[in-house]
Image 1 (cartoon, rainbow, N blue to C red):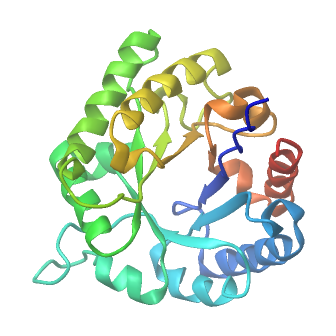
Image 2 (cartoon, one colour):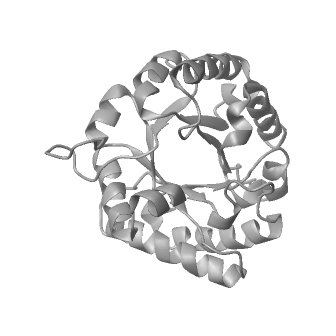
Length: 260
């Protein structure tokens, strides 16, 4: 019999956006750190937990999660490392304080702060340049066909990542598929839709050996049962408000453990 192909590692991401104040973020982080320290899903490394707090408390959360398997990330960065850029965040500084990931191109950044494809491309390059893993957010604006959704996602992938086609060695990247129309809604996009679009994204990544190891996670009103419905179509979930309750986050880790 042929040797079984091992399952890809799971990645569960949580962005706190700007929902919590400093005190609540620190309290939440301590609860999650305690859960992470004892949860069997994280013990063997088959599932990873990524937390992206707001910038003012990022350094403090690095300390809180220091002795746990939780990885930390930032919600944005600037495309230059140093200079006269008031209010910008340097990828070099994020790396220095202990970040492993940085979110790039989230729909809210695109809509509210003008992060167009050119900016996302530059920010992705800045992340890689500084040894950070860009968590590249892609997704279609309007609810429609799988074909249209796939076309939109591929266009965003090409814009941000084709700059790495000629580099030497693998490029560490993660991709979050988030249909914009599903973000913040009562229900996630249908499993059939997400699975079909994810296959298109996977096919594009497989054509580029330097990116073939990229994790693909789903976000957009994800919650209990989403991971089981999608199973191996994605490598994990990108959670928002559902994970505000640490116990609810623990149920997602339980689900990931059952699917190993």
